[in-house]
Image 1 (cartoon, rainbow, N blue to C red):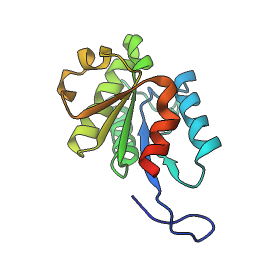
Image 2: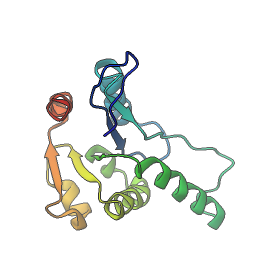
Image 3: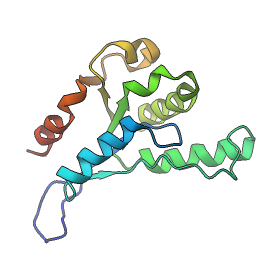
Image 4: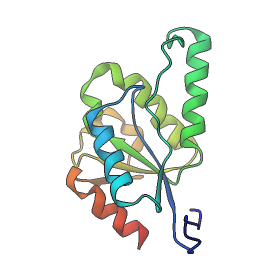
Length: 147
């Protein structure tokens, strides 16, 4: 975790990645809003659910490009936030599975935001390397890791 802020104080800064499937989801926006409205100098959200429609995710070039974008977003982070709500849509699972695999490859601390065991059923490779928090506890979790 880096140590800096806009005012020159020596404060802890947490870098995290929040799962997405290449478009904005209400769940992602809610988490991003919590970060921006409460921790603008202490938490950096490296995830960006943006997709250029000129990039075809079904072509080999498009897949490689998107994979490299995910590696660039996930690799510098300390925490990987898995939004359990996105797992209910089958089309999201392909990309979220890739995101989880990248997080595991880079040994990221994985936090499941949703509070149930549904994510472990979808991603049994997570096993005991995750922390599970309820949706409403995300702000408190951030406060805890920043203190």
